[in-house]
Length: 273
Image (cartoon, rainbow, N blue to C red):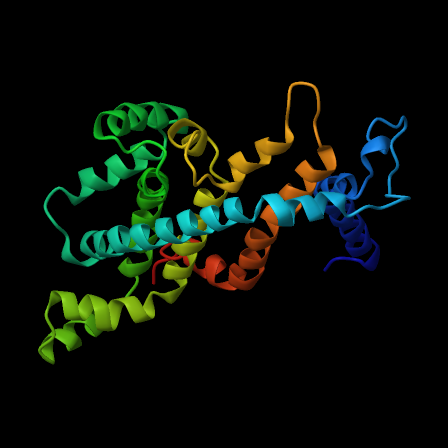
């Protein structure tokens, strides 16, 4: 049994490590509130002594279209990923198609391919097809990162669904699709939330695909919109950091709301009865 002093020591260590990991986030907020003339102050202020909201006003004035594009791309990536990954996971977990083991290995290898390599391949394909600088082209590109992950999560989760449940639905006359839609998906809520969350976060934070495939489009995501404040001779650091803070809010809210579903989804299939 741990002594009270050991428990307090572990608590202190945990608090210190948490503070170190969260300090960049705090500094991002601090700089977003710092007036432009105080940016090069030495030493810098640990707290904004004269806070300004000019950066946030600039975000609301300039960045809302970029935020809307990122939201559109994120939701589109989630939808496309679920449409492709959920049936594929069900097939690998319960239908046992021929060559399923090889497909699983291919999906694992696909996740090891660097994003910049995929971006260069997509650039050549999109250039030939005339798909550059389009938001739905980014949805397709971002989905190539999310789909292999989603298939593996769905496969692991759906492998744990009792076979008796599926057999009972077939006895009642349900076909393969009806069983998948009415029985398997409702009990796979944790996996659905997990895959949806990670797919959205990947698309929301993507820079490589966006910069390579949509650098000159009218509808650009927030990861490119932030460059509006970066010039050769001037960087509006409070606006840059304010944009980063605003762009972080949706991701943080989603993580907080979905954390218990994600914990169950990513550990599915880890323990067999």
